[in-house]
Amino acid sequence: MNILLTGGAGYIGSHTSVMLLESGHDVVVLDNLCNSKAASLKRVEEITGKKILFYQEDLCDLAGVNEIFRQNSIDAVIHFAGLKSVAESVEQPLRYYQNNINGTLVLCEVMQANGVKNLVFSSSATVYGNPETVPINENAPVGAFNPYGRSKLFIEKILTDLYLSDKKWNIALLRYFNPVGAHLSGLIGEDPSDLPNNLMPYISQVAVGQLQKLLIYGDDYETPDGTGVRDYIHVMDLAQGHLKALEKLNSGPGLVTYNLGTGKGYSVLEMVAAYEKASGKQIPCQIVGRRPGDIPTCYANPCLAEKELGWTARRGIDEMCTDAWRWQYLNPKGYV
Image (cartoon, rainbow, N blue to C red; front, side):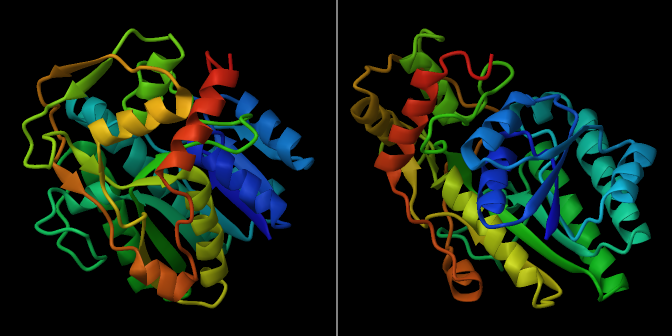
C-alpha cells in the first residue's frame, strides 16, 4: 500500500516509516518541520535502503494537501501531525486547538474528496484525564486534563461523527501512552527542538552533558516514591502497533479504539535509575513544584490490542533506556 504519514518526519513518524518500508509498503510524508527535521527521513532511507517521498507542507493548507493527494495514489493515512506539549498547551491553548483540530479537518476533507477512507489517528492516553482506576481500559471515562489532551479528545469525537455519517470510513483511534527509546541502529531517535518536555529525552540530554540536571516536577503525588507514574512504551513497539492497525483497517472494522502501552507503570525515579544503569552515567536531579496539567498515575490495559490486533509490547525498560542512550550518545546534538 501507499501510506501517507502526516507529521512523518517526527519521532514516532520516522520510526513507523522504518516499520512500513521494511514491511513492503511505500511511504509519503507530509510535514511542516515545525518540530522535526528532514534529516530523520534521510536516516530512515539509510536504515531501510528505500526511498520516501517527502512534502514540506502545512496540514492546515487545504490546497497544498489536496495537491499531494492529486499527485499520489494514497491508500491510507496515518495522522501524526500536531503540537504535543502538555505544558505548552496550557500556556497556548488557542494555538493548540487551531493547529491540531483545523489540520485534522483539512485532512479529512481532502481524504473524503479523494475517496481515501482508511485512517489511523495518533491519539493519546491524555484523553482519559486523571483516571479513576488503573490499568485503564478503552471504555474508561474520558475527560482530558489539559488543552493538548482535549484537542486529541475533540478530534476523536470529530472522527466518530465522520464515521457515523459515512460507514465506508475505517478509522483506528490509537491511544498510546509514553513513547521512549530509539531504533536499534542509533540513527533515529527523539530530537526535541527546544528544552525537552518529555522525561526520557530530558534524562538523555543530562546524561550526554547537554543539560546540567533533571528537573523532577513534584515528589508529593500519591505514588510509591511520590513521583509521577507512567506507562513507557518502546517506540518500535509503538510503530509495530500502527502497522497492525493498518492491517486491521483492511478488514473493514469501522471505528475502533485501542490502547497501546505495556500495562506497567514506572515512576520518574525508577526511570532515572534504569537510565543510569543503561548509560553508566549519574543523572543529577532537582525536585521542583508540580507542573500544570500533570496527573499522578497513568498506565494501560493493552489486552484489547493483543486480542484484536495480535499486538503486544515486547521491549522492557532496560531495552528502552539502552536504545535511548545509544541514540543520544551517537547524536549528542540530535540531527544537527
